[in-house]
Amino acid sequence: MTVHPIVAALRRHKAAVLLIVLQIALTLAIVANAIFIIGQRIERMDRPTGADENGLIWILQGWPAAPAGDDAATIEQLDALQRTDLATLRSLPDVQDVAASTSIPLLSGYTTGDITLNADQKGLSVHAAYYYCDQHLRPTLGLQLIAGRDFDASEIRHGRAHADSPVIIVSKPVADALFPNGDALGQTVYQDDGKPSSIVGIVERLQTPRRSESTWAFNSVLEPFRDDESWSGYVVRARPGRVQAAMREVRQALFAVNPMRLMPGPLGGIHAFTEMRARAYRSDRGMALLMSVICVILLSVTAAGIVGLTSFWVGQRTRQIGVRRALGARRIDIRRYFQIENLLIAGGGVVAGALFAFGLNEWLMTHYEMTRLPLRYVGIGVLAMLALGQAAVLVPARRASNVPPVVATRSV
Image (cartoon, rainbow, N blue to C red; front, side, top):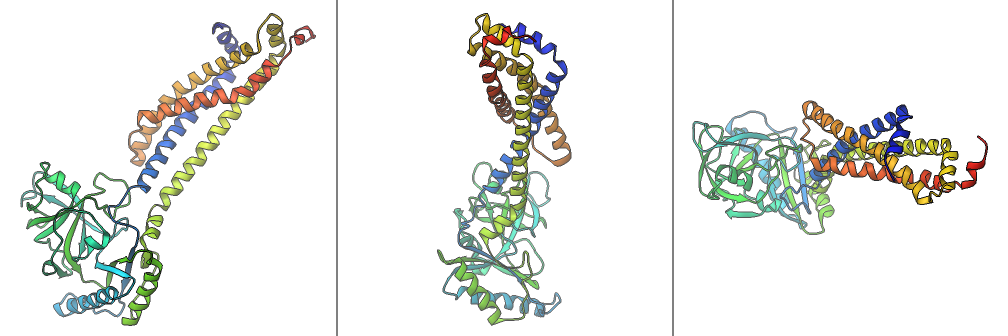
């Protein structure tokens, strides 16, 4: 079958053809970017934190009647409150371990800084998030220690001033960025105040408390420092299968030892880490669902447009189809005619749509910090639109192929 008669027929319906081409182009542009956004959100939600998340519990609470001030006596009283809580939690039957920490992966409320190789803070630097914690945090989180050791109890300082520590544990991305040769363990680095810190341990992975995408999402540093404030955070490791029981025990034990404490929501209180993960990625799930609904609607509208236009043309060309059948055209020839016609229309739409897709992506990159749209998403969109067009035209094309030759003998 030659394409020339098909092109000639399309020229007689320029307006309708142009509308379908534009509809296909806009659908491809939006769907390609939407699928890219969905893929990003799903990848982010599935991203491991580095911790053994099953069995983790996060506690954030405060003492409204705690003493205020920065003097040594006040700091010691605040630290005593923390030590009492930690000892109480560690004695519970369903608690395996507990650590004091200012934060936990996925939870906002953290400090960041730059780590360099020299005291003047010049040259190579790595931006990282700091976890101020005691010696129990690494085993409580279940982080994989790939080199070095944990902190000793004697290395844990406490107070309110976050002075850089003489020893630190870093995540592997930090170690690799500072020492590409793999010899980071035991090396001396410098943090924000210019004082030296020795790397005594390296963990495989630890996501920062930052939930959004960033180039330093796994640049984390553990600092052996227990923060003495009117608010404290604890990370609890429950025994296998005992998370809910441990959460009940924790609440009862903490209020029994000191009822003068606050746990206001949504961040304050006692939360299983699985609950926190679901909450942290709630907006990502919502965005993925919204984009999915938009894709379904756009694809459905485009398919309906193709079906409607082809059905309209079949109705207009019934006599012509009958003439072709009378002259010997087979049913498959009639179906193939409409399929090739649709393929030409869809081909023009996907070419324009590919250009629109990259243009839309550039706009999103400028205004919403989107990353560049990979070519494969546009390729998948092109194939999907071509397949959609062929599927949508199939029913009208089959109806056209069933037109009997006798129609050609009827008067107009």
